Image (cartoon, rainbow, N blue to C red; front, side, top):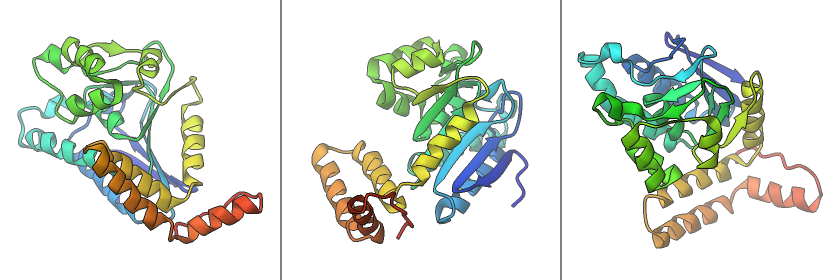
Length: 258
């Protein structure tokens, strides 16, 4: 389909989604709907094994909710729709990497947190945070839930209640992001990372993502049950046999998602 707010591309086994509303790449209902459509299209596509989400331009990944739509019917719909789409990303059966090319604030930070990995370009103007408290509101797209799960309760409360904006180095130190990329290297680093993920056994990747995501929402006993169920399933795949044979034959495995 034709996208008005995104640039959607494929490169080898990687799907790349770019929020295309520079310089701030604000998120409105149309952006959310298009993002969900692109993800749904690739969900069962064996030719796409990893996803990168980034922003157009060099200033910002996303400044979050498009305030120009506040008070409109579409703005109201975007609040619940954002939770749906970001949950879709969090539960996505393929690895999703946020390539954060500038500031990621509010809903932009929440979008990044819904991804499985976050790579951030290093720069003086690059900050991450949930500044909603400064406007007298709260995060509405998962910030109060995902942030404490990533960085811990106390650090999350500090960021949420003070509206703190943190640098890439600070974000890395508290576990909010996966790694830092140098200027001019972000997309190369993100693509290389995604390519490594794309070479892994797709079914095993899917099962690990599902086990971790569901396991974090329950107790250890139930999490172990989910893991055992997944282990039994993946053990019957052709990729499992290929992995064992490749190890014995001292070669790189070629996984086909079967």
